[in-house]
Every structure is written in structure tokens, then in C-alpha cells.
Amino acid sequence: MESKSKKLRSGYTTGACAAAAAKAATCILLRKEAISESVEIPFPDGSRVTFNVLNPGFRLQKGKGVATASILKDAGDDPDITNGAEIAASVRSTEDSGIVIKGGIGVGRVTKPGLAIPVGEPAINPVPRRMI
Image (cartoon, rainbow, N blue to C red; front, top):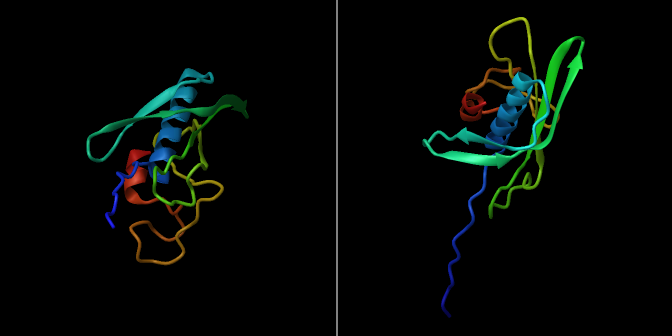
């Protein structure tokens, strides 16, 4: 019997989808209006990938802008439990300069030492953090 090999379809990590959602939400915040488009993000290997934006939104909260956007995760042919999950980001302006990553619903917290992320921080790996 001859085995037929099929080329597997590549997909994207949760971290890449989170980075794309964060970029989309940041663009919305800077424009102060909802957008309905796609965003392109760079990958660590130098390539760039375009993601379709879902559920873009902008609102004022206590006089400050808050923007949201999400990306539908496509894991390709990888049997990933998060395939088809909606990965969302919320971005708000602050008085401080800089970026604070808080993690949201579904994002765990590091509870023991030994990872590249300190205990108590959202369990988002270093490469997706840099992408965000």
C-alpha cells in the first residue's frame, strides 16, 4: 500500500492573533473611530502576514478613548483547541508613556518561577510580547 502525503496548511499562533488584534485596536485608538479592515503584522522571521479584523470598536470611558478589535484564529491543519477562537484586544490611552500588557479573559498568570515571564505576569510568551 502506498502512503499519500498531504501538505499541511499552515496557521497562526494565538500570540500572532493577539498581536494583530492589538495592532488593529491601536490603529482604532489613534484614529478615534472604528475601522473595518485588515491589519498586517511582521513575524520574527521577517515575513509579514495580513489578518482580517473582526468587531472593531471605539468608545469613551471616563473621558479617555478605548478601542477594541479581534481576530479569528486559524490554526491551519494543526489540531489546536483554540482554532476558530476569537482573540480580542482592548487598548486604552494612559497618562504614562509606554505599554502595559495585562492579559484578559482566558489568559493565565505565571504562578511558578522558571519561565521567561516573571511570576504574577500574564502568561504571554516573550516573542508574542515583542510582536504586541
